Structure formats: structure tokens, C-alpha cells
Image (tube, rainbow, N blue to C red; front, side, top):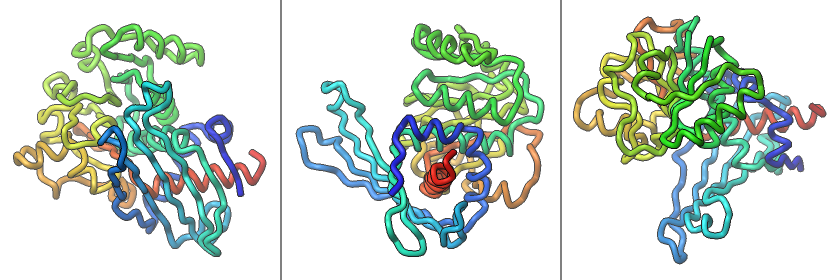
Amino acid sequence: MIEIDFAAAHRLASVGSLVGPLRRVFASRAVSPERAHYDLPGPNPARRLLLMPSWRAERGSDGDAGGIGVKIVTVFPENGTRGLPSVNGAYLLLSGLTGEPRGWIDGRALTLLRTAAVSALAADLLAPANPEQLLMVGTGALSRYLIEGHLAVRNYASVLVWGRDSRKAAAVAEELRARDWPITVADDLEAAARSATVISCATLADKPLIQGRWLRSGTHLDLVGSFRPDMREADDACLTGAFITVDTPSALRESGDLADPLARGAIAAQDIATLGDVIAAAPGSPRRRTVFISVGVAHADLAVAEELCARHSLGA
């Protein structure tokens, strides 16, 4: 069985190299049941086990008779006191022909690469063809991957990074400038949002950071941080009149950026498309504001796992 740890996953693939495999899986007949959530006994009631399975009938990138996979994630909030990550995980890829295990992949690496590559795919489908400036809101580990993904599908004259802690924003900018990317720190979020063509958000905000009144008519918003109903990164004005796309219909109830305005009638569910819808329609980038909201979907994990294992087998 193939084993791919965190470092190996990054040697095998960049964020941009995964956009093609993800485009194909979102256009396929992949099946992703609802993720299973289990509360675990222990000293902290927030301990959780999550299981995210997926499979598809089409043959995988290596010719196998359709992939089967499951991501296993644990959330142990008290791990911070042990100097350990609170979220850990692993991905198990199985043969669609025999059911035998084919590969084990580090869950954190796969999730970081997958999340950013899905946002890059959405931007490739929806963002203006010639954007001027990218604004990254958030300074966590995912911010680096999201910037890499957006730069893989569009050319930007400049990239701004904003965070509540300016020192963390400076650290992100310094790290990525080493790649010769045109990145600077934004001190004023409103001013940065007003000047940006594309805004990517990956925060843990529970109240909207981005205000619709700041945005240009053709701005593309990439919202990744709101994965629970009590989390919001953008206000209602960002969504009203926009072309809204999600990675999975589950986002309508899982993301506060959607669940909250839907409950109050500020937006309508029937006006929200999925990435699969957009790929099938191939309409080109809409002229109005576009919003992509991602909460994670298991067949995207499957596509990345298959690609990583195929590249490993080829000696990439």
C-alpha cells in the first residue's frame, strides 16, 4: 500500500496542478454521502470523530475501476495544551475493483491542498479574466495555499494580505515574497477590499468582516472560513444580487454565510448553483459580482487522493 506523508504530498503536487483533476470530479457522477459526526467521550465534550466517504463509477486517473475513499478526522480541542494540532486526520484510498487498500495519505496535507485547489477552480470559472489585485483575508496555514491557488489560475499585479494580527500578516507576506510573488501587507481592510478584484477569506470570524458596500460590481468573493452556521465572513449585501456558487448543497445549511441570510429571506436557495452546475453550463465569468462558498466535499478529497497516488506510482 502506498503511504504519502505531509512532505511527500507537497512533493507530488502543487495546488495549481490539482485544478484539472478537481474539475473532472465535479463534472462526474461521484457520490459523497453526508459526512458522519460523532461526539466522543472524554474530558472535553467537544471531542469529535468525522467520517467523510466518497466513491464514483468512472475509472480513476490510473485506470482503476472507480475510486473509493474515506477521510477520517478527529477534533481534540485540548491538544493545544500538549503542543499538538487539535485537528488530525488520514485518508484511506481503496480499489474500486477489489476493495483492497491502495493508499494512506496524511489528512492535513490533503485537506490544505484540496481546499485551496477547489477555490482556485471556482476562481478559474467565475473570477474576472484580467483581475488587478487579490486580497487574502486571514493569516492561518490555509492562506498560503489559497494565494498559491489563485495565482495559479489568474495573473495579478499585486496581492494584499490582511489579518487581525499585523505581525502574522507580515510573516505570511515575507514567506511568500521569497517565491518572487508581489505580496504586501494591508493595514486597512476596507481600503484593501475596495481596491481588490478578488477577495479570498479563510478566517474563524463569527461576524461579517467583508461589507458589500465596499465591493466593486464585478468582484469575486472566495469564502472558505464559514463552515458552521454560527460563522460569517461576509454580510448580506455581499450576497444580494450576486451569482452564488457552492462546492456542495450541504453548504446551504452548514455555512452561516448562507444559512443565516437564507433563513431571513435575504437570498433564495433556488438561485444558488453548485460547481458542477457551473462546469456543465460553461457560461464564462458572469459580469456581476460572484461569490463562492466552500465547506468541503468528500469527492474533492477523493480526486486529490487518486491524483497523489497515481503520481506516486509513476515515480513523480
